[in-house]
Length: 300
Image (cartoon, rainbow, N blue to C red; front, side, top):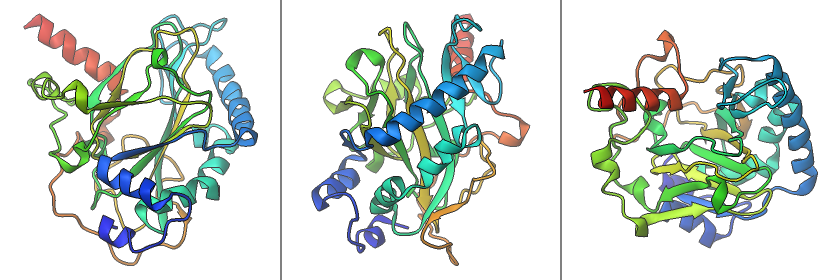
């Protein structure tokens, strides 16, 4: 569904000013949105999943490990598809607290695509370079939105999400480097065009929630604090928006209608989108792709 059609529906959760800000800036931060009763359940589920990572010695399809990870000191960067690892996450992602919020920016019929839990362990967890999301999983329109929930809150030292305000209205940049490798990051020549005045950082207390448009340029810095920065990241779209490439992150829930009804016709936005590699050949976490690209450039 396109913005003009979405805006014909009255908001359920957001104020008109908040919704206007999302469509104007390409993101919205709603401080302390998720109540403590849900945060306690999410923390408990996260602790159970992290505890399972103690038996893992190398990154795999579920756990992306940080340097120094061990059975005694589990250090994670990401849990892939947390909704498939613990039922509480899927219950949360289907709760009207979240799906009504999403409906305010994608329309009344809401489809689930995929999710991550970026734990981002403390003491030097990696940065994520400037990028846009939609090139990794192109859809027939640009309604897809990522919901980011800071489970424990986030300070400046913890590597908060950062956005280039208004960039969703600009071009889609290539996420391939100069050697043709898909790195899920802007080329240095494009990243240098971003000025500090354009960049906004999202911090806030526990439960602070972010809505991020799929075209918005964003990234994050290293976590230099002692504490992890768990950020739950489910992705949704309008029900009439369809992904037309194999998804890099698969789940039995991909395509589930979590609010409203399924679409009978597709929504199309004719603006082009760069295609990712054929993910059927396998998927690697974007941090390893970015590291490979840096090593290749240094070797030239």
